[in-house]
Length: 97
Ligand code: SF4
Image (cartoon, rainbow, N blue to C red; front, side, top):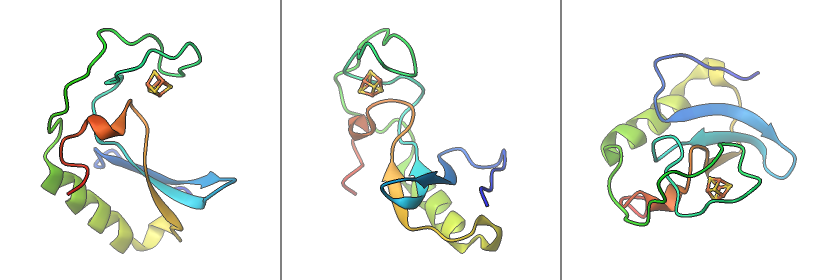
C-alpha cells in the first residue's frame, strides 16, 4: 500500500522499486534544483543550473518527517530510505548530517 497525504512536505511513498523493494523517498531540494541538465530528465530543463550547496529546507524538519513516516502504521513496510526526487539531493548542505 502506498500512503500519501498533503501534510508531508519532504517525503513520499514508500514506492515499489525493483532494486530496493519498498522505498521511502526523501526530497531535500526544491523542484529542479540541479547542477546537471540531462536530456532525459523527467523534470525538464534545468534553469538555472545550481552549483552551490545550501540548506534548502531545514534539516530538522526533514528528519522529523522521516521519523514520523517510520512511525506511521498505515504507511506499511519500508525497506529503504532513498534521497531522490526533485533534483540533485546532495546540493543540500546538510545531507551528511
Ligand atoms: S534531476 Fe537528475 S536527471 Fe534531472 S538533470 Fe538533474 S541529475 Fe539529470
